[in-house]
Image 1 (tube, rainbow, N blue to C red):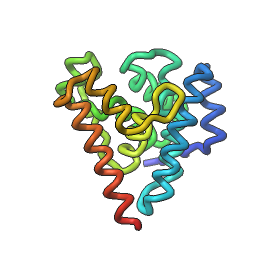
Image 2: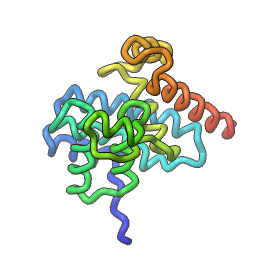
Image 3: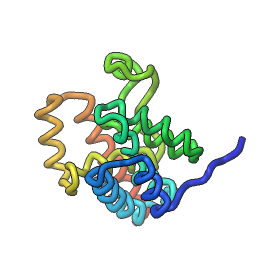
Image 4: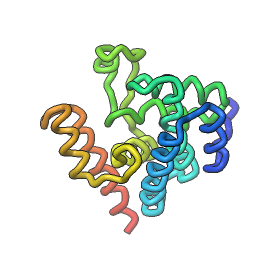
Length: 175
């Protein structure tokens, strides 16, 4: 199996611009990347190059769609760019705090498991969740928003807590 390249941050910017990503989406991606880089600096066993590229490109599908389907559009774009499959999977699974196959079917997404599982998938998804538009938000700000949108005992809220706990546990191992 041939492995494809993981683009640098600079190359990711070129790819985003090539696909006519709006400047505010690029700004959002840069903030997500900054947060992800901070996590990577504290986690030894993470592929930082992969995380940075995925954080930069996670919303590339917004060139075609601004709904939850932007992840599927992003997968198509990145496949056409012949990028690393691990990067493509991160983009596919970054939406929300993860979506089960059953939930995906209900939402009209192609039936599949969209739950981040690898360290890199979780760090990108969690970093994305910590950004409100084009500003970094606290965990509590996002939690309050998720509770008001989805309910206190929703899968999204539980997933957000799981992501936080996972990232903190991994970082603690490296102290």
